[in-house]
Amino acid sequence: MGKVTGFQEYDRKLPAKLPPAERIKNYNEFESLYSDEELNKQSARCMNCGIPFCHNGCPLGNIIPEFNDAVYKQDWEGAYQILSSTNNFPEFTGRICPAPCESACVLGINKPAVAIEEIEKHIIEIAYQKGLVKPTAPLVKTGKKVSVVGSGPAGLAAAAQLAKAGHEVTVYERDDKVGGLLRYGIPDFKLEKNVIDRRIEVMEKDGVVFKTGVEVGKDISTDDLIRNADAVVLAGGSTIPRNLPIPGRELKGVHFAMDFLKQQNKRVGSSPITAEDILATGKDVVVIGGGDTGSDCVGTSNRQGAKSVKQFEVMMQPPAQRTENMPWPTYPMVLKTTTSHEEGVERFWGINTKEFLGDENGELRALKVADVSWEVDFLGRPVKFTEVEGSEREIPCQRVFLAMGFLHPQHTGMIESLGVELDARKNVNAKEGVYRTNVSKVFSAGDMRRGQSLVVWAISEGRECARKVDEFLMGHSVLESKDSVN
Ligand code: FAD
Image (cartoon, rainbow, N blue to C red; front, side, top):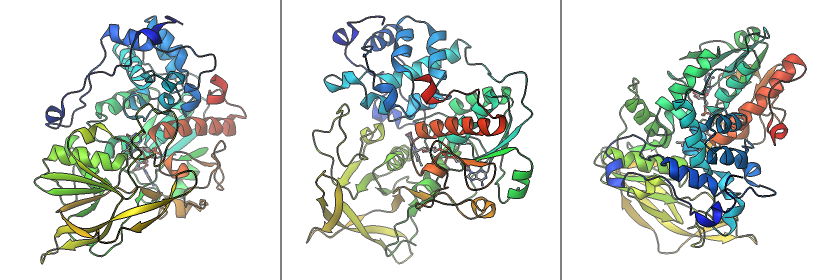
């Protein structure tokens, strides 16, 4: 290891961010990069543990101590090779991953964890600057064709790996641009879209063909999809949002979060918007749901100039001792604080929305809410809530964004037409580690198979699924698996 005493000498430091009042003036990313000296110090904090837990914490199995060492020695080619051997898209995870590797960092037990996510972002940005990110597809092709449905991180990772194995890959995407939720869910202030475009250019040089504006099961039939490929990967995401079917749901001003976020991402990306504008400008906004989607609605509402922003979560408030670097899981685990919360929001926990109240024009004017208290099991997990007597009240608002998660993939169209079996949660039934569905030569990965999850899991599933497809087509696979590199 470069500097054995680094973890004793240097504190964890994150790059500077623009102050909230500045950053909400536009949709750009607002974090700066480390100086060379600071990057060197942060990488020196890695302890080179005898048994590192960080790469088990990472769903991709990123080989973290080794890339930290290479960064410390300023061996950029080496750092990039190590990182890209397990992760096709460090530029995405380095920006928006909740970094389970950092929760698993041994240093995190008594000091703040190594800033692994930031170091990852720096390695890939330096690699792009130095021209190290190059196509990897072999000149000799296998002659096998694979079709991938969906261009989110799972579909992209599967496509990148399959091209690397020498297959001819076509990605079908029903939206007008490639990227899935990276493009049209996650706002630009977390992930600027030129970061996706830059990667797509490399993949195109690798021979991957992208067909946008094509919905499989509608614009092309599933019979044609199967007939024209030796294998198919379904990576269509988990797109059906959880609703709140209470009185007043039909009122104008109550929207699913994704309808709101997608429109704003399209506006920033100058893509055509066909539906009526959904804007928070000048409105009192309530976001219902405390996860990533909810937090993105908070950040977007503030950037649009909302009059006020509140965020409701029915779960109880996380315990005060839960901090960024607390190594053990506590319940509830979903209620993290993000940069969007720094920008202005009033957060409410343990609150249940009972009714949307409208005016004479059918426009939302308020919410009828009540506080709740939770019964917990022996592990402290919330199991049942009851309303706190006398707590019912009205909260005035003109916009509500429902950000309560996603149920499962869309079944109508492609899935029904293919006859793909579903699991108990109504996701595509394909066992983890195997990724094959009941339909001959059809595989599945990402949120469509796993259910609503994270970008890092989507990339991991796309990679592992590609390896299974490669084995299916060739009898063996030349692709790495996370078990083989660790
Ligand atoms: P998706 O990204 O959903 O991509 C699926 C793609 O398939 C879509 O583009 C869809 O149009 C296409 N498709 C579907 N059916 C068809 C068809 N029949 N024909 C053609 N195309 C089709 N995770 C994080 O790790 N960090 C975050 O900060 C984070 N923030 C998030 C914010 C929001 C608002 C949301 C909604 C999710 C967020 N997530 C985050 C979760 C993360 O984005 C997802 O887990 C991840 O994108 C799933 O990847 P995927 O490739 O499986 O599916």
